[in-house]
Length: 78
Image (cartoon, rainbow, N blue to C red; front, side, top):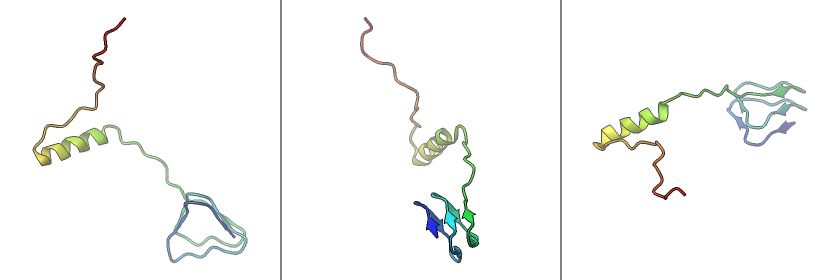
């Protein structure tokens, strides 16, 4: 059997003889003998989530939220 790096085996699971488990997988079901077990969730990007969270935390703390917009440089242009 081979278990790739950064793999999480969520008990109770069994990995059969000669089976492979892909690196980074989260295995929640048994992997049969001579099988390949892969378990990765699809990436989801939630646009605007971080900015909304910063505003929420700032409001809870009673502080104005900081903007992540780029500040203009004070250097003189040539």
